[in-house]
Image (cartoon, rainbow, N blue to C red; front, side):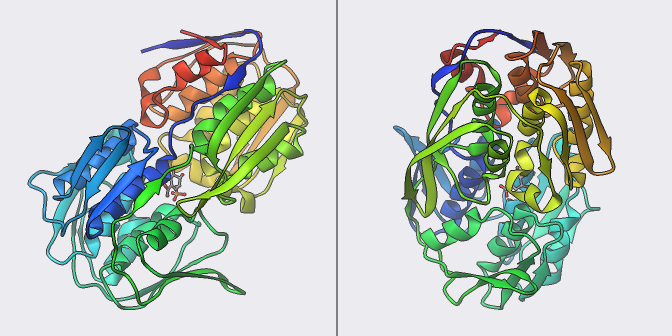
Length: 430
Ligand code: S3P
């Protein structure tokens, strides 16, 4: 399916952004592992997250939608009859492999679509194997995991990956042995925050060696009520659109503003974006707030590798903002983007170039030479990557000529209502 974004007038109003994807996966998995009932409001109903819902159901947990809430009845997991198909979702497969690893005698084979089957899994299976799980597979899907009574681990998480850290922590729920993950730069900490909501003790220490995340004695999970904030990775697109389309003012209410997720917004501020945060509050252990972005002329940015974990999924959105800045933007430390849903770094460079913006990937550094305006007028290859499709539709709203993307159905992976939300703000996409 193809979609085209047409240049148009200002974008204004409240953007109804669905719940955070990372928190949604974790809520379903922890709910399924916990004793008793977990009620979740604000769950993202995207392809990725529904994959996790089906998977935990296959492991024996009951997952139902009741009105606006999702209700999970936790259980002792059993081996599913068929392979667990994780579709396009790296988070689903890596976190589920971790959970199964800590459950003695539970055995499951994990598969995925062509994109997921090409992504590296050894970063997760190697530490799980060291803890004592039985792993069959060659570093890519399909992989079979058989859970065991695990020993402890001290794992150096390089590069800092929240999926790897979370897999180890979920495996660690089933053992009383010491489990520690050390990160050079902290990656998103939603698993740690949610484990606490389920009654587990997780410690965090800033040591000369790095950030040390470790399990305490209490590891039994009790079902709880969770409210998930709006996803800052999806909000990135209408908010960047507001920054680059003259006259715009867009608000996202109840957005997750966990500081390990707000790197894009901090960078946009250094570029001169007009961003206002209000009504900060705590919701299920996470900070949420209302964010308003108004149009402003943008300066280029310089981002170094240590800043990347807090905006790893927002680089396509940032690249669009940089295309409209006047001057050379430099974003370092993007090697990981080559192992995403697509070679995301290559896809960004190819898409920008097709839209008349000079851009190049120099090793793991992205350089974008903005001129303050963008021609557009291109057909973009999505390469099966939802964030590439959404990013170039966003660019098309502010360029001189329309931008078309192929495989627009991939948008449903993370942000099913994207087109409707943007139309409600006044965008012309069809
Ligand atoms: C995620 C962690 C990040 C991110 C992904 C979601 C998570 O991946 O890119 O979209 O929910 O833990 P890495 O852990 O591989 O950096």
